[in-house]
Image (cartoon, rainbow, N blue to C red; front, side):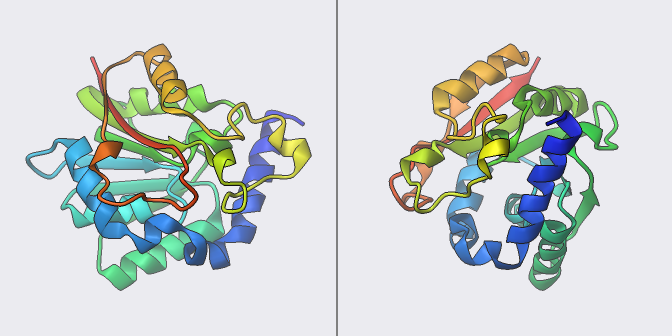
Length: 218
């Protein structure tokens, strides 16, 4: 499969999942937990420009907006963004949603203070490319916040792609914290810090090893 075919396959998968995704998504059921952890990871004393890459149904973007930040959120799935827009409307939160693949996102260099990437890197054929986009759009001293997990630890609860597509994704089984730290270092980020210990209760079922890491663009 070509890179464009992989991207199209991933997008089609999430388009099909969109109508029922929030009914199964643990982070949607525990927004307060995520707001607390993200507030700590953002380390922001005032409203910041936040970009959420691969926003899906918008849970991370909405958490950032609820914390008072100016939020733009991008995703390749029109159906997922439809759910996200409705969630933002229902919560009366102002989020700018843009349908685009991360690699093609029309985001200006040095236009963000914080970039979030949650549960996205495992879905990408080239996860380093998303981190390169994040680094490009961050201002000097800006912060990236990455969260993901080792989803193969709870196969009954995880999303899964068809075998032909899955074998092209280097982290289809999920990511460990060590994986993410290596990716962040290779992308040129520094001062990597873990925040998952702040969860008052496990954020996902099945004892999935989950991490929330922040790092800085120097």
